[in-house]
Image 1 (cartoon, rainbow, N blue to C red):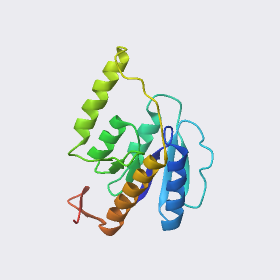
Image 2: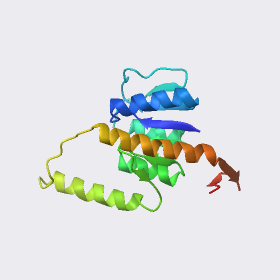
Image 3: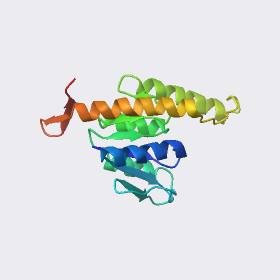
Length: 164
């Protein structure tokens, strides 16, 4: 089990929480980005510098991802790819993406992007407060607990299921 982080857009408080948690519970955290992110260090942390270009960090995360990993990303198309690969995925505000909700989230994202591209979208102000960090921390703890309590049972080749 690893924690995979789309580090390009991950807020610093979330990165710091992931680093503290990975060191405390001794789970490797892999941060992928197109440039070095300051402060990513520790025995259980790795910074993957990806080649320049659109989607290279996303592709690297998908390449590394295995069932049983937990990924953190704001990128809905990346989240969709990871959910299809049987990876648990959440965003930096605590939303957990599943097979049941990812297509809906993707359609909302695509609709909003279409509005914005046509000048019709609402003005977006990126706020990340203690409330969002608490929501992330609570969801992050729940997802890690589930993954650690119910290890994957591998059978039939590469098919993975959780015991719940």
